[in-house]
Length: 151
Length: 151
Image (cartoon, rainbow over all chains, first blue to last red; front, side):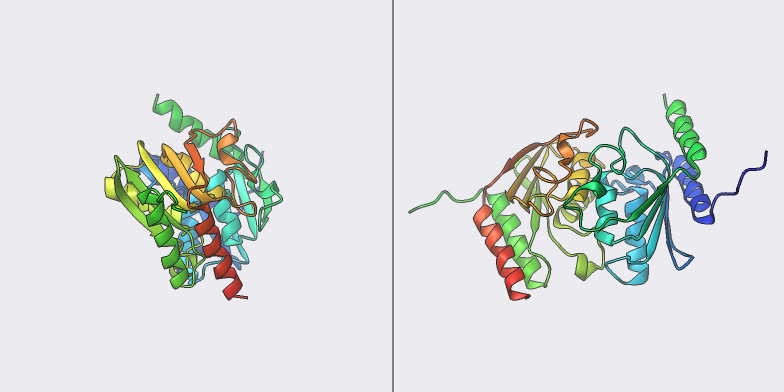
């Protein structure tokens, strides 16, 4: 069976996730795209950077803002291998990201379709369009392998 | 009438908030304390740093983690002039902050006692003790003045 190829930004986000695993970090990767061009790519690095906020999405958003020289990422899309947590969903709203694409959902730590459902709050100042599921199997398998190997 | 003086870390957080206002940033300040000593102090700087994640709490947490050389801030307290948003509450949980003291509550953007109530979610991995109200009047007045002057 031939499957549709993944959109390039999700392919890159999954490659970033693999890079995190190689560094002993939970394998999650994120990419910011504007007008079809990759502005920033990053992977999860809290242990390496000794920074509890260094999730893939945060690093990608901060790098994109630095790259574009602006506080807000209007018109930018974020592609990430896992459903964002509350911290990252909050950052996505603050950054005014237009569209979020995530691969696997995360019932334990996710805050988009689970837990605090940040974008569904009446007080949320900016709601991105959200699309999920592309690359889900690969992203989830990477996480399963990572946690199995560390047991 | 003589009022009780504010605890020193909240005094410092409010001084940091004033510094933010002087820079044209929304006046919010935060301080991380461990064993009675200030480990990091920061104020809100998203515009100055062109970084949508540069809230006072995020900068203070990141500086404290860098200062202590560790990803988690166990045994640390965070003092902040305003109720943390979803992003900052998420970061507080990731950092394993022991106690959070905030001055003014924030019905519009807060995510501790309002909105997504991050620490109340069954999926929240770490719940700090939370205390609010000390310095409330001063913190709220600083915000009111800031937004009034910008109109």
